[in-house]
Amino acid sequence: MKQSLQLKIGQQLTMTPQLQQAIRLLQLSTLDLQQEIQEALDNNPMLEHSEDTNEGEIGGEENGATHSEDLAGEHANGENQTESKATESSSAEIDSPENVAENDWNDDIPKDLEVDTSWDDIYQSSPSGTGLARAESEDYDFESRQGTSESLQDYLHWQLNLTPMSDNDKLIGEALIDAVEPGGQLGQSLEDIYEGLAKEIEELELDEVVAVLHRVQQFDPVGVASQDISECLLLQLKQFPRTTPAYETAEKLIANYLPLLGSRDFKQLMRKLRVKEPELRDAIELIQQLNPKPGEQIGENNTEYVVPDVFVSKVEGRWTVSLNPDIAPRLRVNPDYASLVRRADSSSENTYLRDNLQEARWFIKSLQSRNETLLKVATCIVEKQQGFLDHGPEAMKPMVLHDVAELVDMHESTISRVTTQKFMHTPQGIFELKYFFSSHVSTESGGECSSTAIRAIIKKVVAAENPRKPLSDSKITELLAEQGIKVARRTIAKYRESLGIAPSNERKRLV
Image (cartoon, rainbow, N blue to C red):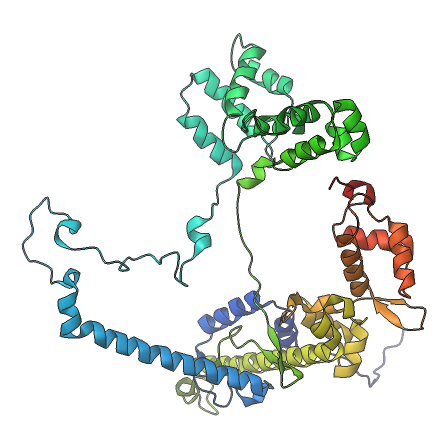
């Protein structure tokens, strides 16, 4: 083989570190972005928070923010100034001699106190001078103070430890509690639990396990450690007095005819129970007050909050879009550190400062690019979906990523990144940007109807149906055809299931 040298000219797309950073920031959610910004502030000494809108900052005129954003910032600053003035005035009132004389609890601390002296013996408690925020105040965090993070098993074990019983009974109770599923029912049969305990406890009888099970079933929540749904509902029904209307009918129904209730066969139920419709209705209403999964009341309650990235409001008859000024802090390059960078200096200190300065500028530019792209895409969505903003989901127009990509002159992948985990605050509610994208269905007039609008129509039709005779999927298809919308029955079934609406036979009920 002969060796030779050849020259070739070609073009190749290379993703620079700046472009990779911009793409990564573009697809971050609001909470992830705040974490990324905080990490950059901790690692880069050149970055700092800024309260002023100077050059090189996030939030200045260069980042493509709308005029409404500036007004929002000025309004927020005005509120802060007003609050600071109010704070100064209130502090001045508190420090005045008149107020000190009026409030006896604000006396000076005595130098000599007796050993057994308590705080309440010397000072009067202030009506609002507590370290914790009151429930009526805006700063009161209800979730952190009222929420619970313990599991169902922990809650049951705590009750078991408070119940006086022998050591063997406690071992049986622990085994029963460990077998309880998150819904509250036993995940194993009583025989399997007995066989496992018989290896640890000598001469154990099944009756002993049943006796401990009955004691565990008296724990809170009522109905826990039940062997099936019927037993769970019966345990809860026993909490009602037997003089409750239709109590006996509900008890017979739960014990013997629960499958017929699930299939909504009311005629068969009335014949089996030998009751008339009013009494059966009362029994069903009583059963509906019970919880088939009582264990779900106890458990981790981690609430996830959605922070909108953009706000949509109507100003002088026109829909305007503005970025949320609170999703990211204002950043700038520290001018003092930047002035320390010297040209033509290759020392390690100068190289460190120069590299961090360049990274800070890239980071700020990437954030500006993210804000501009997000605002541009959100504005395009609002222009296309003004009918939704005015009239609701039924007026939603069909739209795909390609439609927005053409209008903003970007690739579809970029639009997909922008609309993922980004939320828009509208008069209709808070929605993810991807919510506004949907496929279309042809109409008889030659137009198009959004699948989101069809779901809204199905939801509206089902809400207005006769509960005695619910609409079938075929009937809903006919109703939509009368409005000029051609949809197959299986498509209606798919949309209905996505909305969490049960089939017609399960929606049937007595009025």
